[in-house]
Image (cartoon, rainbow, N blue to C red; front, side):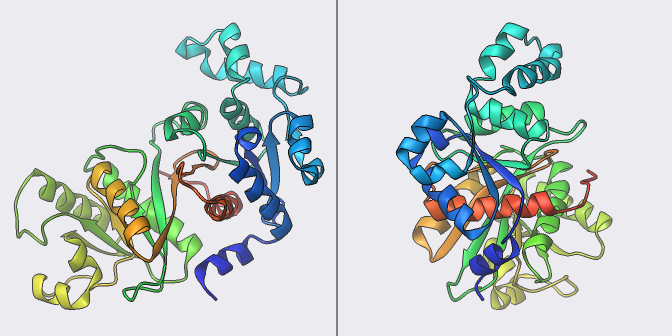
Length: 331
């Protein structure tokens, strides 16, 4: 069974409520929620005007639809939004205006327990989609990052792998990278039965070049290894050394954790990670899902504006898995 079928099987008959803030202005989202409902992946909650949505498609009459302008929840969510942000200068008048924004309204539904998670971003930027979650669901004394799940068959691998961080942190520090890697490993364990193998990537392999960026990745891997002795990791390494056994055997010395077959790829900064995952999506025979956020109190995930209907379905399924995970993050 391929990974996508397995993903849908794992989330079938879920009762998790996932809110979709863009349902009223995204045809792709409407098509996706209809498919999600049919497959039993989640209980979709749509933000928008009920009459308009049902006129668009009568099948939506069976869905939970909430209009921020008329909902009985709006006053309570407004007050909670004000309480959460008043220390940042938000006034009650500002909160009354902000709650009408579908992404803020949807995020507040998640925050207050009326939904388990949220999926958006098909029609708006990452900033517009995730800003409410970063303000309202971010854990204290921590940070939020993302990963992208890569699936498909291309002759190199038939197994899924993770690339991180492809969507949020522009230039993660030496201290942040080991945490980003560990979060990716924990997510990988939810999604796959394959043993995680972590590669801290660079343009250099084990000191073939010496610069600030190569030292950053080398030191990050050392910290990761110190705190996660049971997880195989290498770094700093070039991408080919991380993936291919024959290249790794030429470039790496003895005594390393593994040779080739890395499935958790940690990038030094956002620029290279984002370019790489998009290149994989458009030039290769591989398929990218995400970016998927980690480090929030509850799952809120972001779509590319080039997302297909099935992209929305698969990202929602992963969001459901994140909801079902009964583990409190400790970072």
